[in-house]
Image (cartoon, rainbow, N blue to C red):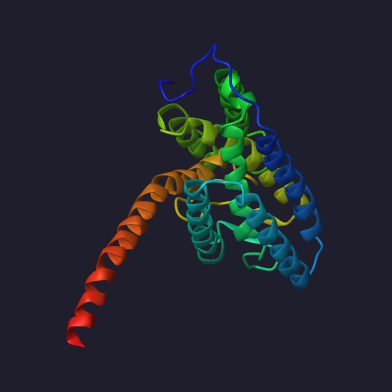
Length: 260
């Protein structure tokens, strides 16, 4: 069941870059979400510009596959934000929009999950961290459906089960494991600050929903899975297109010379 986890008793390399990406994103999330809790629309737009700048600079040192993954993650997550928030009303931002910093923020969040997943810390202690996450999130989910909290969380318990499937059966469990930390961090801060609020009743199935749902990391894992699976397909398509154009150029030149 843990066949896709890294091998134990193996020495893994610690790269400063991986920890820097994670630290910067965690810090930016805390600052930006608290600032946006009482900020203006103009401030949101300015924060969006800063977030795009940070994301581009962080991607400068990544390979083309990771860059493509981030592009897909940003595109897919942005579509998901508009559908789940604006159209469905599953959660709502203060101004009823999708703030300008959210799309690049998803890129930074995804890149942080990748950086932590490949870090020496996570690779060395993968099974212990996975157990910690499973137990912690499990307790949170049970609390949500126990009847004690004012706002129930049936959706969170359901999402927790989905998250476990990603973690135990997915092809990239380390990315999903790392995603739990950064996404739980941003959800707890964002909802506590009032930057957005999850609906009490989930609009599709009519289930109770926490603010945030305990297993909310599962939604982000979906974004991660789409990015990881889609990147090779798009890169291969671009390569074939490039090869086709290169192969077609001499033919066109030759035909042009004969026509003259």
